[in-house]
Length: 60
Image 1: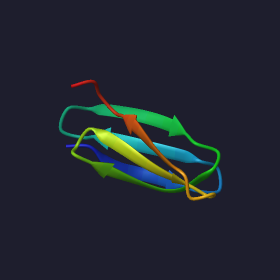
Image 2: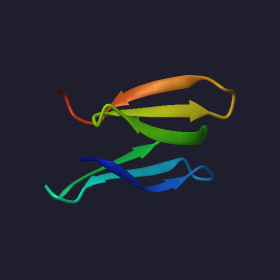
Image 3: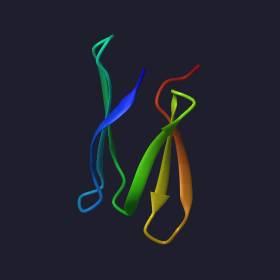
Image 4: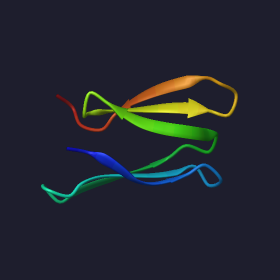
């Protein structure tokens, strides 16, 4: 299962990992306010202006 292991709103850096399978994915969102994982495979980003973006971590 994926989890956010690093989330830095100052730099926009997000690291998502699945430690059981040794997978890691990095995302860079310069306007990042917060990030959450929904449905195990989607990264939901909220930007500083309140807009939202959904990024797939893996293709299902």
